[in-house]
Amino acid sequence: PKLAWALERGATGGLDSSEAFDEQVRAATDGRGVDVVVENVGTVTFERSLRALARGGRLVTNGSTTGRTAELHLPTLFWRQLEVIGATMNDHREFADAVQLVGSGAIEIPIDTTVRFDELPIALERLDAGVQLGEIVLAR
Image (cartoon, rainbow, N blue to C red; front, side, top):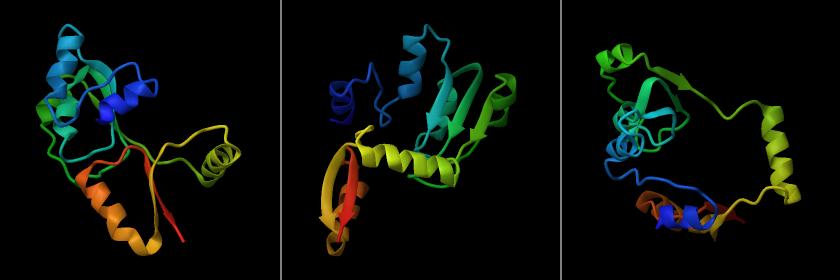
C-alpha cells in the first residue's frame, strides 16, 4: 500500500523494503547497484542497503526507526570502496525555513491521521504497525 500511495503522488518508482530490495536494485541496474542509498530505517535494512550500492557508492543514514545498531561486514566496505555518511536534519535556521514553507502552504505535507494528545496510544499503534501513509499529527 505505501508504494502504491507514493506512486499515486508522483514517485517514479520504488521498492518494498520488506523484500529483497538489494537484489531488485541489482536486477534493475544490470548488476551495477546504485550510487546513493538514503537509509532511514536502521537495523532491519542496513545490510541490504549496503549491498544495493555500486562500487564507490555512498550510504547516507539519517534515521534508525528499527534499531540503533547494525553489523557492518568490513570487507564489503573496503573492497567495494563504499562510504557511510551520517546526516542530521540541518541547523535551526534551515528548520525554521522549512517550517515557514510548510506553514505558508508552499510545501504540502501528507497527513495520515490527526489524533488528540490524550489519544497518543492510537498514533503509536499506527506507527508500530507501519500502516501510516503520511504524518501523524497530535492535536490538543
